[in-house]
Image (tube, rainbow, N blue to C red):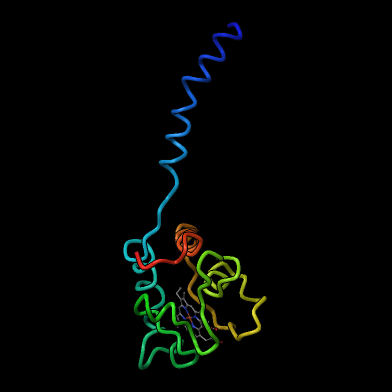
Length: 128
Ligand code: HEC
């Protein structure tokens, strides 16, 4: 195997690698990916009038608009910044750093669910 052969092999393979890398970049949709998770795991407690989480914090997770409105403490999502979003902190178990009270035991999410919500926030938390 000589250098010319190696270089031409690399040149041939490069576009394939780029295609694979682009194909694996996941685009997250609120309607398709995020909403079903929230409906399954959160909405019982975070919808008016009787949800425990709603009563305690005013956080209604029933629609995109109410989710973005946040709780009585302020927004729970910072678009583009999953590190600073209280919602991500909570589901990723980082809420201990928050000054607001988050001492309730929330149902654990799967790694895939956590990742989907993180990517959705990173991609701008859009109503898509
Ligand atoms: C069993 C009821 C229950 C479920 C289910 C639940 N929550 Fe909560 N949630 C609460 C309560 C109660 C609080 C208020 C905690 C406190 O004051 O200690 C809260 C607080 C929160 C807060 C903090 C609001 C703020 O601004 O401080 C967020 C964010 C939150 N919940 C998100 C979620 C998400 C996301 C889910 C789904 C994974 C979920 N919750 C499921 C009851 C629930």
